[in-house]
Image (cartoon, rainbow, N blue to C red):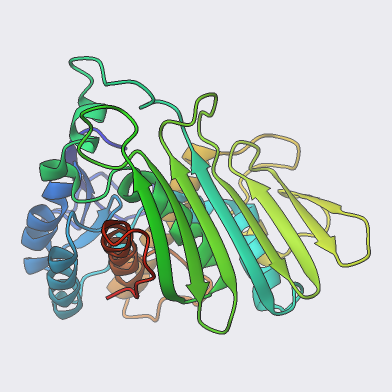
Length: 326
């Protein structure tokens, strides 16, 4: 989804055509970060729904301006934190909300990769813009994958960040942005967290992993094996929950596409987010409320993500001092 362009489409039923007769109904923005704000701004001014890649914008001031513009436009705005579209992530969120884990104490989330472990080869456009502050913004790994990890922890637990302490590194010589980050998190209510994101973690491909520990149970989920999740009630054997298998509820079922045992993954998660947005657009078009079970990341999530990066950069510049998001 990083082709450096944007495209418009209709949210009509399959076979209805790719574009309405009276113009574009929604636009998907998949450009480098510095183009998110100017492109989204122009479509929002025209009341066109926007589906934007993360992070919301390159900078925090732009994010705040875009939130105000989007709220006044009346258009739907979605952010493609696609990992929230995995069925078992919906199950994990439901378990937390139902109190099955009890009061949350500890959250650990990590996202290691190794594709930037060496200087980027000439002509590698993906690496070029992601390591360029003018196009990526002030965060390197923190903005590119750290925002995914942070959003996933927030989506599942519902915990709100109180403060963080971040230690950012640029291990590759000459690199202007961070390629590794260790972040301690303090959440409102007393829970604590640790976030590690790295693009120089040799041997890791796409190792997004979430662990949540409460008073009554803990859970673990890994994106590279997304069709299973481990739930461990205190004092009991670990339970393996599978996508579409026994023990999962309606929150996971409504995003499950094929029978249990057949792998679903990254592309289906994107498809689930787009399908959720399409349902919201249809409801808006018909004058109906958006159904409460329809969930997708939006403006608030986007602003939180950019604020997270901003706080990480500020904290690291102060020798990993504790700072509050702003």
